Structures are given as C-alpha cells and as structure tokens.
Image 1 (cartoon, helix red, strand yellow):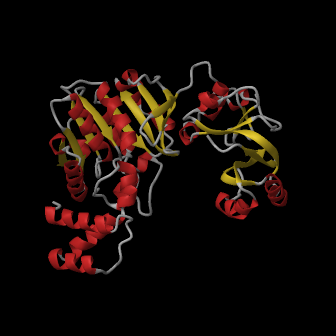
Image 2 (cartoon, helix red, strand yellow; image 1 turned 45 degrees about the vertical axis):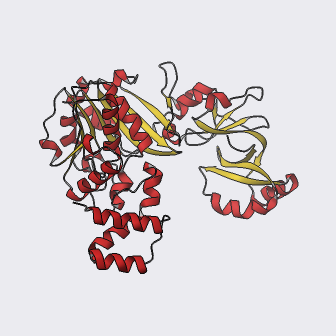
Image 3 (cartoon, one colour; image 1 turned 90 degrees about the vertical axis):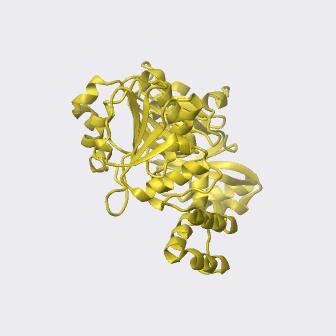
Length: 423
C-alpha cells in the first residue's frame, strides 16, 4: 500500500521539480529520507522522474507508475474511445473486467465511462503485480474514481467470465528479458491462454503491439471463427500506439466491418478520424498508379502512421485519387493542381502543395534554398538514410521563409520536393 505520507512526498518532489530532473541530493531529498527512509524516497524519486511522460499520456495530476508500466499504458484519449466503444455494446447489468490492468491507463477510462452511465458495478481491475495494483488505487483516488475501481491480485485465467461481461485485456509484451516482443505467443499470458477467455465475454478488446502478426494466429484459432472480429490500429499525436482486436457485439455497435481492418487517428484534443476501406476500394498495390514525375501544383501526401500500420496505404491512395511514388512504403502524390484536397485529408495525412521538385543532391538543394530564401521548417524522409535533424541544422541558415522538404524514393532515384508548410 502507498501511504498518504509517501504520496505527499511524491507531490512535494513533483512541485519542486516539475520537469522530472531531480538532483541526487538536496535539502528536500535529505528531509524526506529522514522522514521516510531511503527506500521510500528512492521510489518517489523514480516515479517523480516519470511525471513529464505520464502527464503527456494522462493529463494533469500526479501519476504513480513504473517505467515499464508507463511505457505499455494506453494514453487516456485512446483509452476513452476504446472504453466507450466497449460499454456502448453492453448494458448496466454487465460486469467490466480490465485484465492485466497495470497502473490503470485503460482501467480509469473504463471506470469513468461506467460512472457516467451509472452502471451497477465497478471495474474489476486484475493483475498479478501487487505494486502496480497499489499504484492503480492511488491513480484512481486522484481521478475521483476510487468507488468505480476494484483491484484484484489474481491470475486472469482464474477470473470467471460469461456473456454478461465486457473485457479489456492488455497482455504483457515486455515479459522477456531485454524488452518487448511482437509475438503474441510470447506475451504473458500467451495467445492460447487469453483468447479462450476473451471469446466468453459479450464484448472484448485485446491490445497488441502495432507490429504483431495476428492473421496466422486468427486463422488457426477455431474459437475465433465463430465470433464477429475486427482489428483497429490506433495512432495518437502522430505515433501508432497499438493494434486492437475487437471480438463480439462491440464489432456491430461500433460500426466496424467484420473480418476487416481499420485505422483510428486520435488527435491531441481527443477527437478521432476513422479510416475503413469500403469493399470497392482496392488494397492491391498493383491497382494504384505509380507516379513517374512530380510537378509544381501537385500534392505530396504522407498518410498517418495508423493507416500505414494497418496496411491501408493503397486503399487510402485509392480513396483520395493518389498515386504511389515508391510502392506503398513511400509518399503518395495527387496530381491534380486544380483540386484542393485539404478537406479530404484533414486528420488523415500530412500534405502540402508542391512549389518545387527535383534532385536530392545536397549542394543543389542548398543553392535552391538560398536562391528562394527558404528554410525547411519540417523535413519528411521516407525510404532513404537521410537524417532530418542534421539536414535541418545544415539548411536552417539558407533563408527566412518556411517550407516543408520531402525526400524519398521514386523507383531507383532519390528525389526532393518543397511544399508549402505542412497542414
């Protein structure tokens, strides 16, 4: 249990060092060691150093977490969307279970959604790590959700589930020495341990690493063939965060196509854009044209990371009338100078209208930038070994007018393009 005295010690450290840079010694550290002892202060310092990252994920507050649990925790804005989709698929008589809950990224949003809907029972938060459950209790308390969270230290496989349950499960992807794994058979619990649990629930959401290859496992798992299923890749603030396998009634209530995939783009304000290909939109790379040359007035397009991770780049290109510059791994290009694509792409892609295109030769680029009084405010690189940070430092002095510089492959050729600043 984390005592109120220890929590207040953490609060004092966070107030004095909000940036997380805490010196090894100092008046406050010495004072806290006298009051609490070295071990408690060491724990507080470790947690205080994580606060900038924690606040980025969960907002203002003092968040208890270990470095490992914080890395795996779902940002609150993504967890909010998932929680509402899950609870919209059930009713107030259902039990909510968050298995492998960790420090509570998903638990807190499930609890908030249950409270707002005035459901009958709190979220059952299950984990085998006692320390993380204590941290979850503290996080729930500061969020005003203590009455809506019931921690349970137990093996998730022993928790009884049925079709009156809503389940979220986040298997440990960092259970192996040295870091994370993308192989669900190496998760803790393993694929063959948590899938039989999930199919018993009315609705279930299983969280995976974005790069996890699930289709072969799905094809081999007989119990899943009888369930509605859908996979979504979530990005948050431009970075792909997770792959979620939805099972059960949530697929229909959330408007997800069975046995299909989609990309969910979550912005910093919590709003979302959902890209799901229609049956007529091709995902075959060969069905999308290859752009031979880029000209002024064309549009350079870089789809969101969730679209790329879901393997939907070519479907997205088909939707917006774009071509590929170098297979599906490269940038897209819309060759229609008369068309303003900003409305079509809002939230789904970074894009800009081309004002120059040519070779990526360093000397020629520097000359071009100086002649036009340009400097690259943003540099986008795809498919080459150019380093955007070093290029920005080298080109910053070339001019005063901001542009976006794109460097990528077009067949065997490396090209560069300048566009208006990113939108």
